[in-house]
Every structure is written in structure tokens, then in C-alpha cells.
Image 1 (cartoon, helix red, strand yellow):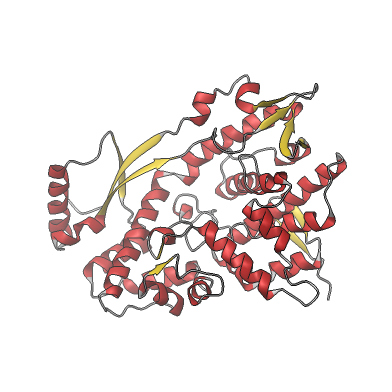
Image 2 (cartoon, rainbow, N blue to C red; image 1 turned 90 degrees about the vertical axis):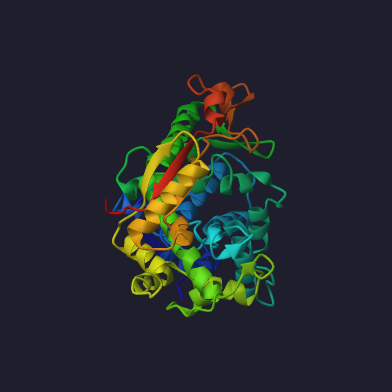
Length: 413
């Protein structure tokens, strides 16, 4: 069987699967599941074109890793065929642990564990599934790169840093599908400007303007797309729905849902349960967007009024209304809001908290604590981008703006 397939990607064109092992990883059920999970969660409520999947993002990031490896090899950086393949597999699997609708499940159905930790567990499971007598750990190097335990540190920087192929792809891809210009970065030029000095990824001096644009694009995309007020409002509504469903399930009420979603609603799953090869991980790998959406459509007819109201709001896009605030609600304001919502919606005051939420949105462009973005000058000196740039101020780069929102259900006056 010919496994050297070509994928036609709408952002980067033809993407080649370079080895048989890459193909086998791509065909694994854990990876195929990513095609049923939207990359941008609920952003389609704002940008109707944002329907692309985490699968397409993973393939795009793998393509950029291929390009990055090729550029470094041309510059004499020592990279073996095994390392090249492992780096591609590591980036292909970097998001494999994501649940439906981005980070929502981390706040509702699974406790004390991040999607990065779940990704590692899934990688270990895939490693076992693809093992042979001749190669007992086919993903060994890829897992070491993902864990940042591989001796050559620059491989992990390409995978996860402040200038990595993951960010290059999602900025290009998300801006493409959302129809916004802000995220379009010169990924091809950035990759051409990469080099390695003392096992550390650097950008050649002539690429400094592309780095500046990359950082500005990331900042703008967070506030225009990822943290758009309406997207956050939809996410808060979805969290409320799942929390109400979880509360009812834990109380013994039988709810319509898929077997996988049923498992997480009716069991308290923690990091102790989510281990490689566990039943919890197997059920998690069966969850995708369709499980949640089909359940919510059915819950619109629930005899629990709170769950029915929340579900109807979500399906029919009657999202929470968000307003910016200077300070959190006082106890008096909470009491007044609770009373008004209970009266307007015909629910108990004890249940009114399901219909409002205070939420802080925040992001940062650059972190002093993480791997720096370093610029390589012609004389061999290396400077941090915040020092090398003429237009970027370190204080502005590392400043984390915060917006406090009050999200409240829309009720008739």
C-alpha cells in the first residue's frame, strides 16, 4: 500500500506525508477524531467560516515543521532522518488530547488535568498500538521531544515556544477561515530565517520585521477572534449547560446523551482516572463536538427548566449579553440580579446563578519566563527581540491586559 499520500490543504497547498510511520499515526483513531472537533470552538457564532477542524490545523503545523526541518538542514544543522520524522509526528500529535469545544471540558467534565497531559497519554497509547517486535517504541523520540526531554532542545522550541510552527499555523489558518486580515503572518519567511545557535532556535537579523509582525498579529488575533466577547459569551453558556447537566446526572436524573458523554456526566473523572490505557481515556477519545451538540438539542425538551432554558438559548443563539465592568459585582448587586433573573425566567433564586457569570479575559503577547525569541546578528551576537526591535517595548510585550465581563442571560423586559 502506498502511504506517501498528498493532502490538499486550503492554506498551504499540497502537504506530503513523508514516511509510512507518519501515515500510520495520521490514520490512528485518536488523530482521526480531531476531524470532528472544531479548531476554534464556538467562534463560528461570530465568524461563520470558522468551521475548520483541529485535524486540519495539525496537518498544517506538520507541514510547517517539514519546511522548518528542510531550511535548517540546508544551513548545515545536524538533523537525522529519525529526528526529522519524530519532530513531524510530535507536532502532528501536539493537540490530540483536546476535547470538544476547546477548553470547555477542562472546566466541566474532567478535573485536575490539562489537554497537554491528555495529549501525552494518547501519544503513549499510540506508541503501544503501533509497536512491533522490531520497533517496540516507534514514537519514543517524538514523545521525548514533546516532553522537552530530547537532548537537542531546539526541536521542542519548534514544537512549543513563543515562535513555533503551532502558532504560525493557527494564526494563518484561523485568519483565513475567519476572513480577518490581522493574523496573516509570513510563516514561509519566518521559517527561512530560522537557525540554531548553541542548541537554541534563533532568527536571522533580516527576519526581525517578520517576527515583529508575528507578535503584533498574535496580540490582535487574541482580542479580535480568540477572546471576542460573543465567543466568550457562547463558551460561558456552554459551560453552564454542562455544569447543570452534570449536577442533574450526579443527582440520579437520567439524561439523553451518547455513551461517551454519559460516562463523564455520571462519573467524577480526575487525573487519577485519566491514565494511558484507562477506560476514562478510551471514553474521552470517543468524545467530539457531535456528542455535545446532539445532547444539547435533546435537552431543550428536558423537564428540568434550567437545563431546557440554557439549551434553547445555546441552540437558537440567544447568547448571554456581555458588558465590560470596572469592578466585580457587590453582594447587593448579585442579590438584585438574582432576584430579577428568577422572576423573569420563572426559576428558583437558587438556580439563577446559571444565568449569569463574571469572567476575566486576558492574554499576553510575550513572556520573559518562557524561551525567548532571539535575533542572530551578522557578527554572531544574539539579542532578545525586545532588545533588538526598534518598535516593540518589553513592557508592552509582557503586559497582560485584562477585561472583566459580566455575562447575563437575555430576558424580556
